[in-house]
Length: 248
Image (cartoon, rainbow, N blue to C red):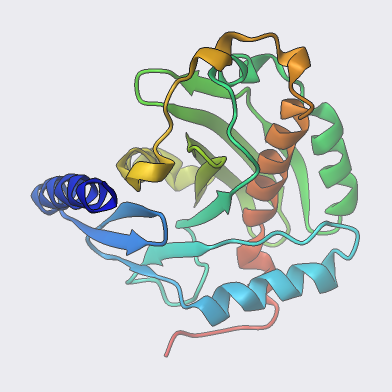
C-alpha cells in the first residue's frame, strides 16, 4: 500500500517536473512535499537562513522566533535575501477543518498586527495585511501584505498556504513594491506548484461539517501565527544586511 502511494506521488511529481520544464522551472523534492522553482532562481543555504533567524532574535527580542524551512531567490542577485525572495514554512499544527478554511477571511488579525507593529517599530512601519481568502478549487489560502522596511522602502508580499493533513505549508514571496507586479505571478505559480506527499494531501472529511465548538483549537490564533511569520519574513533583507554580505 505504501509502495503504491509512493508510485502515485512520483508520477505526479514527474508530471509537475515536466510542466516545470515547459514553463522554465525546476522541481525541488523536500521532506513531505515537492515544489517547482523557476529557472534563474536558487535555494538559499541552510546556514544563511539560520543567520537571519538568530539576528531577528537579537534585533527584536520581544518577537517570538520564527523558523523558515526553505528559502529561494534570484541567482543573479548580489546578496543573500535580496528582493525578490521566497520563504517556506511547514506548520504541523494539526489539520484545519474545511469549514474553518472557508471562514478564515472573517478573522481579524488586528491584535497580531498591532503586536508586530509594536515589536518591530524600529525595523518596519505601516504594516498592512489583507484578508485571507480560501480558493477551494486550488485548495490554497491567499493573503497579501505590505510594510515599510527601514532603509529599504515599501515591501509587498503574497502568501499562499497549502493545507495538509498535518497543518499547512506556507509559501511567501516578497518584492519591492515597485517590482511586485513583475513578481506576483512567480510567487503565485510557486505556491500552486506545491505537491504534498500522498499521506499529507488535504482530504475533505465528514467531520469538517461539525460545529467548530467541538474543536479545542482556536483557528483564528493559528492563522495569526501564519500572519506573524509572513510579516517577520519581510524584514529579512534588513536584518541580514546588518551583518552580511556578498555571495561566494
